[in-house]
Amino acid sequence: MTKRRHRVAAIAMLLVASVGFGPSAFGQAYPARTITILTPFAAGSVTDAAARVVALTLQETLGQSVVVENRAGAGGLLAASAVARASNDGYTLLLTTNSTHSVVYGLFKNVPYDPIKDFTPIARIGSFASYVGVTPDKPYQSMKALVDYARANPGKLSYGVGNSTTQIVMETLKKRTGTDIVRVPYRSNPMVMTDLLGGQIQIMVADFNTGLPQLKAGKVNALAVLTRDRNPALPDVPTLSETVMPGYHILAWAGMFGPAGMSPEAVKVLADAVQKALEKPEVRARFAGAGTDVYWSGPKEFTEFVKTELVSWTAMIKEAGIEPE
Image (tube, rainbow, N blue to C red; front, top):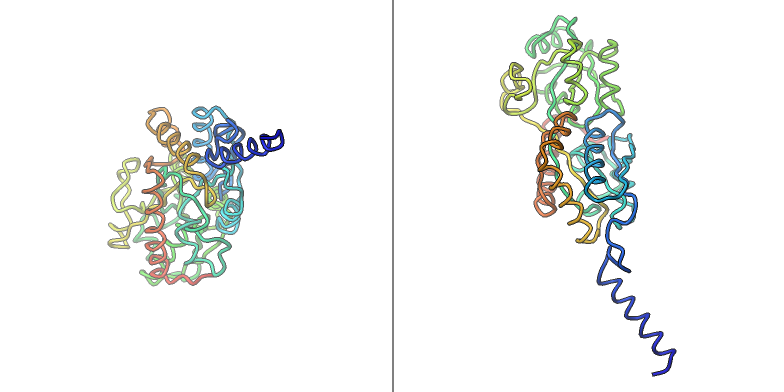
């Protein structure tokens, strides 16, 4: 064999090896450089807080820098679209919620991505508890009193929307109780809280990361939590089901995705790192402090969960009478 043929054969073997090893091609194990996690809501939101805990734990476990980039706007579509279009090499990820993957077809006419086909589910990390909040100076300090006031004063109350869960809950409340409460859109929940405290709006659905500090400071009162059962952090606060919406239950979830077609090796590295981190008491404490109830599931289970949630949240949106915009 001539030297030229030797060289061609060597190049061919190298190409075959690179295809076979995916992210470990040329001996470079994943991750070999900085990972960027996009989040669809602003700094200070519960999703942002969870993303920063994930970034810190991945950085500690993987030995590479992990940065969080806030890409707020359009109900989460901006961040999700950016990740859907990104390279699937595992260095651009999305830490998101039901807002980008469970509600998009019910809330938006034009969705620039497919929430199932355009992403690789990596791990579910938990859920976000929330409560209906008002300031203590208002005359309505229970859900019944709030509904009674809204019925007597149609169009006089307003609520701020910083995420999809808020819109679904409040529009369902309006439909079930026959009330007229004005919807005011925001880019994220911290901005909603600012205007609630300032009196520009009267009602918000506060996630625990945004809402518990204000609750403890006596600046906001919790009228009801959204889940089927009372929350251990607020044992004296009733559920919506106990008050004005019998049988109602809703719980936002959080999880990590990459673009479609990520290598199984990279997915496993990330999923295993998240699982390992969530087993540590100190990390679970960080998540709790960020308003996140930890619940890990791996790629296979998370994939099926996302498909199921898309169906169930779309049904809840239809019950609320919300038309896609």
